[in-house]
Length: 146
Image 1: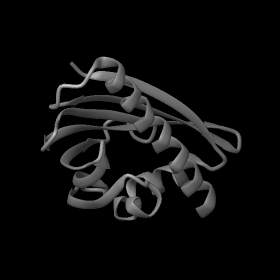
Image 2: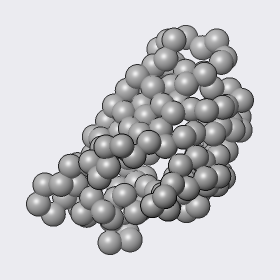
Image 3: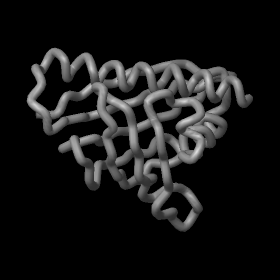
């Protein structure tokens, strides 16, 4: 069963700056500490990642997965769905961006299900850590680059 979580953070930057950092997948290993490799496999007509492959460190292991992006709600949000993964059944999420003066509220929704039998409490904590850490690291990367 998938664990679902969402977190929100305020970033002192325009939504376009947040988008630029989030969609620059090649640079993820520079600012997202658990991402060891990220590669764009396909791009859409606007040059945005359409399909991407990742290798991340999680639970003392190296996890590989491929996701497909959906920009049908751009520029307000974009989402992704797991296509394949060696330890994942589901890794579907959304980043949403809401401008408010000189800040952007970024909301991250995530549904994650892993193939290993793990108690629900631990899975919920892991899902919360993923979203919380991702947003904190994104904030640092965007505000450093702005």
